[in-house]
Image 1 (cartoon, rainbow, N blue to C red):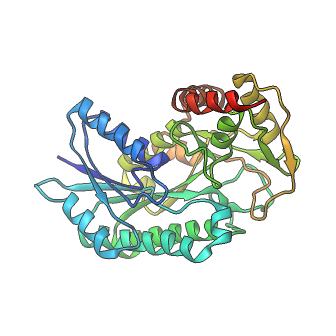
Image 2: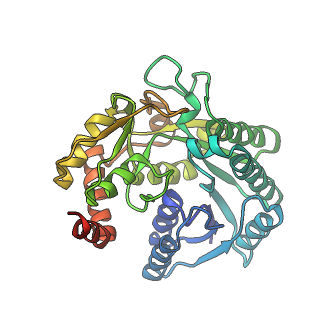
Length: 339
């Protein structure tokens, strides 16, 4: 029986990939150091395993530890089960974080990816599906973003994720390890951390509105984003994992909805869903922020049948419902303390 390894399995997207595979009855191993991942996400993954009867095993390890990564890949392949695919979601994300601490970000995202590829090569893994970033495009002119555009990253984090793409391609060309890189565009949804300085805008705004706090918009709010629900990203990963090598190996694909939404409009939609009446607070733009983002997803559609099945609006509804369920008590307490 094939097995799958998910790095960053306690994180936002990684936990949903593991969850989905387990509910399909597939055995999964996960690797996470819990630097940004959460124990409650692992509890949800374990519940998915219990519901389906599939096997789940967790390796608590750091991608920067080459020996620990090699052991996790080796042990996932034991007991007569072939390790088919690694979903490499583990990273130290965030453009602002990488600007403040580029060295730590570099070692996690570049050394960690290199260690994983070396372990995959040594232990006969068939394919690695890599979480790349649309921030690699930078602020170059021309929309929508197409994979053939020359990347122009403007901050350490996108540089690191782009280098990961180059490593993926080289390991396919030199060693025959099948690799696929998926450039995520502004993924949002349940399990995204809302209370970190580096939280995604959708998660952060949702919790702030629930607490009666005015969210901050950096710039004038007319920046555009191709917001993509996490379920669509999970679907893209599973499709990329099973597509014929001749269609995907060594390639890069956009994962998005193919629609542009301004931050101002996104704020309005969230405010309506949460019955939030206060205006946003506007402040200066942040260094490293992308001005506009819109993807062409035709390559992923043609190569492995990707379609964003969950719309922006439906994704927002599901996201708000989840945060209300998970953080309702926190929001109620905040409301009780306001004058």
